[in-house]
Length: 577
Image (cartoon, rainbow, N blue to C red; front, side, top):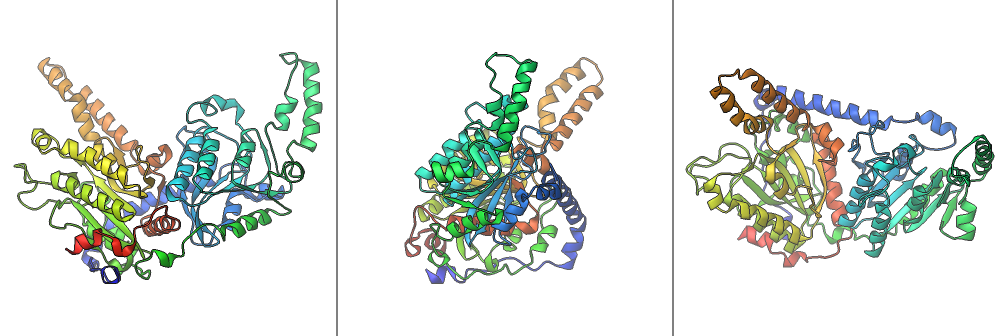
């Protein structure tokens, strides 16, 4: 297959000074939004005690531990701003992402020991579920940096129980072990109750000499009251018990190394724990990249800085998706699938870090005359029509057959509507695409370049209940909503306007409500809001997109559960004809 892959057709054009000038205002708006996102990230990372105070206790912070553990230049954070329950802490008290340890990709997550010593708080279990699902989907190790003081007791009703409560991760750890995906954990600090299970549910435990894990911590043991209520006598007893368990909390390293054997290793230093994980990661199941690379890795032929002058901040402004893609893929080369059909959709094969990846994206602007062929109105890029939906179904199916991971780039205003569109079977073709995605069983990711709208957001690789979506990225121009705010306001109030007009009443109060609704849609679809509520897993700068693409491709091909030999692939041959 060397003739197919080593040198694919080149695409893309150099960016002229005139285009840079034309998009200078848009670029400035994107950079301003990226600065706003970065400020929000830094605020979240500064939550809790300052680094100096944690270090004075003889501990490293979660960020210092992660920096020591992860290979430089490979960290791709996820869920940094995730805060679905609007915690005052601004996060879920865990931080995670993709990174290499000893040259092997892993999903890595750590408790923030700067805030309540890494306690369970609302929204954390949902975050952990995303992380365990990511490790399951990519079949790469899950690595924990555990320092969990248990439950934030005053808010336990918000996260302890229920079908997706804080006990769920322990079952997900068991599931990962059952499918052969190891869970490694470095254990620090005091980890009672739920923190204890975070320590014991992984595959192999690397412990610091001063750590402990236990079903119940000192606070729980000292809090048992035989009277069923508290009085001063009971308070004195609590004081004595608390002092006792503070000196020697249950479940120390000596207990769980010498007695139970739960701790495989105990280390005298914090760095020693992380060195132990690094040593084990060297031997994790992984194919050498030469098994799956179809060509030598190559940088794009054009600068990624061009992206700021190619992707408009304004949602209704047209642009060339092909030019954006040419700045992200190896050598700015591709093999386009059916360029003669479904012009609103790009489908094609590209190389990311030498690995083969399928790409699907929305094209923008006015489409060719006479398209869509079933209607008497012109087609506009961003919408989905019959040919485009069929083309995506075919391409996704071929990718599944050839075991090729898929990257979706979304900027869609929805699926074509109306009786003409219904007769063209767009409703059924949209669900067909969901079926096609589901049957592929290959990892996929989504990058929302601008609009993620209506059912098109679901069918184009969206994360909504999609087991194959490993993660979703947003950028400074991302917006996600069921429809544009102005459209929603018109749909909600058009009949009311008619009624008020016929009754001779003033229209301004209704107009005010429409503007208020449009503003709410705008505010609740901003990139930071999308990240906080989990609509995207991270908001990244435009120049960071390729790093995440490389992390995704490297992770997918590190230890796949099934292989299509390169010389038995059908999709490249179908493209070539």
